[in-house]
Image (cartoon, rainbow over the protein chains, first blue to last red):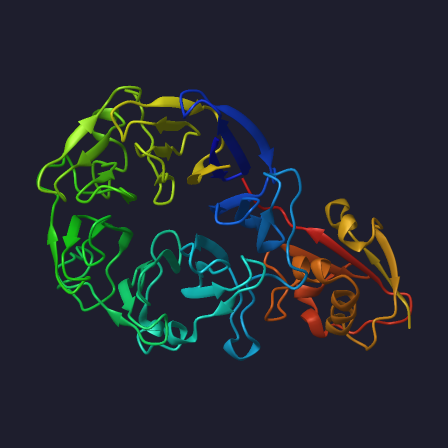
Length: 359
Length: 93
């Protein structure tokens, strides 16, 4: 049994392994040196785990690559795994999210990309098809780019139904109940402090996570505000009251324990650093009614931030959580965020972190 | 017609390990040349142009010493023996 962390950075990919139930880690890399790895996933459904990476060659454009031997070799599709159909006139700018679907949908992988687009693969990520239902949505021409770009950065397929939830900057949350054919915005209650009044859509939602016990209960870290919905996104209410600040990028929910989620607060939009320079993970056990901070193993004097995809949970028991910072540090917790160990330091800016237990 | 394509070292692996290619462009223009190259070396084609057929932003192409962005772009006409130089621009961090 091995636990694996895939760490995508501004200048390459690193893999960290633990063979002692996440107590100690060894770092392997760089892989894909000098390439920006903004999206990564570990597809542990396959007999040989597949590491999928959405990369950006500095000069030579974006692409999706994969490795079935834990980074020893990499492949890509000749004509590009993600390729806009000719009639769209669009071109792929960046891969923001690679999300394997459930075990029952063995080879299905989703991708969220820039420009705002959702993609679905049925061959494990070698080729993707544009989800036309969202591309053709009448709202799409009015979605604005967030600070990072015009991206669908969150893709959450429900394993039990045909529901798919996406989030984007800056369009907000959209939900399909039929696998991607039809979509509706579900943002009521989510603040948009950069607009004069709350819109139907256009919020800058940074990340969404689904509760372990109820697919209608979701959590959102917004560009100003942390929110929860109990009705599939139709209405959101603030759960930021117990936090030191309501700005941040990622939010992660437990895969096993209802009501449990984690955030990493930053001071504010105009001050994107941890409060007092103390990097802390805040956990709720009651769906956001109360929060408690974890400090053990996390640094003080840390004037950095954690980006929206640089925070994740594994599927082990107890749940492990992992975060990577813009100053190249990676921390792991094997006890649901009580204590952390340092996995890596001095890497390039960490853009994405994903973890899985593999055979 | 045959033209000479000069590639940066980082793209040579995508063209069979060669930095210099003698290519029949299959037409008169730079776009024709890149279509032909993409047919022979799809990954090389994707590094130079996106799927909409546009030159990537940080790729510079010179035909006989002239930057095609200041000529006719991908419609720049080639002639027998033209030298087509593909270079990465100054970018990154």
